[in-house]
Length: 417
Ligand SMILES: NC(=O)c1ccc[n+]([C@@H]2O[C@H](COP(=O)([O-])OP(=O)(O)OC[C@H]3O[C@@H](n4cnc5c(N)ncnc54)[C@H](OP(=O)(O)O)[C@@H]3O)[C@@H](O)[C@H]2O)c1
Image: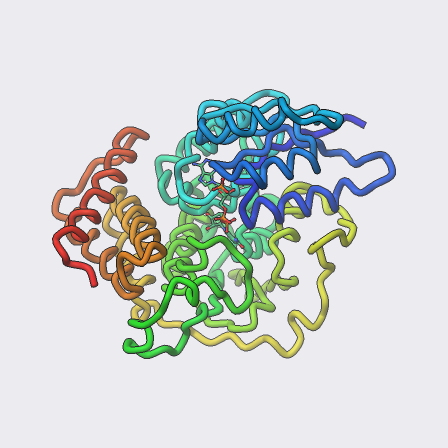
């Protein structure tokens, strides 16, 4: 059987590890399965990438932080047992190559932040199937990326659970339009449900939120995730980024997105059609399920329950159908996302950058929890006065850097508590 080659961007992260579980599960057949790992890519975690080399023997292992790749190369050279048949490469340009090279058919975009955006862009331009978790890159690319995607032969399967749920509720002729800037409301979709657990601090008072620590913010009640997305869930900025992701992926007008509070995370999304039917999606809260779906897509494969890959249980949905409306206007992060979408090309980039900078500053205990969204709001105000053009990778990168510089200045001026 001819093998299909996969590249995983961000293999050492939470989604990256869930992707490797899904890969193992799908490949657990007598013949060794239809998939093979082409490249595992991370930034600097040479220790975990080394373990992954030993366990999975990908063709290539890449660290974009070059000095850490040198450590890994030395380790491989000095290894006394049977050497894994893996080549270690360094730098973002190697990551770009491993996403666009002809041998690869599937790229899992599971890195955090948007530093790996050029690699995702290369995968789109060279027509790969992209399993998309990395929402920061999608927002960074915005409408500009939609246009490039629309002209490519690439396909996108969202694996962020909310978007994966919506995708699975679409018919195949609508699925092929996803990511291409096509408004699905013109094809019978009336509304979609974006569901929120509310994060670890739902119902906290402002006084309580002031005292929130990074350690507490990283303890999500349902999902185990990386630090950036955990803090985003705590501020509800994750829901705001997902809201923008909904617009960019499904081409929907904002009025077609209904945000609902659903604490139990038994249901992950729904689509309401113009003929009065509503389809809901339910599964265990487990990223590897969505990844397995994406790797197999458009087929469905019975993934063996290896590691965390669990079959859906009725208990996940049963008695847990409580969906409460969440007023977008009352949630600051959602208000900022809505403003950013209306304001124009430049503003999602500013919001994305200010938030990324603020989350890192909070994790390093330089600013308090409430300052994260405060800074995002201020950055949108500041840059809104100029209306920056954002029609190329260069202008987007420049605006991202300007926003981060503005954030540093705010900190140095003592304007953040
Ligand atoms: N976790 C979830 O359940 C979940 C659900 C839905 C969507 N997402 C989205 O998926 C993305 C990843 O989230 P996560 O929770 O898996 O994050 P994470 O655990 O922090 O892992 C991030 C991964 O990205 C890699 N990375 C970051 N910058 C890189 C760069 N410049 N070059 C190469 N690799 C780089 C990291 O490498 P190092 O380890 O070397 O730093 C790591 O492998 C985020 O966009 C998040 O919003 C996550």
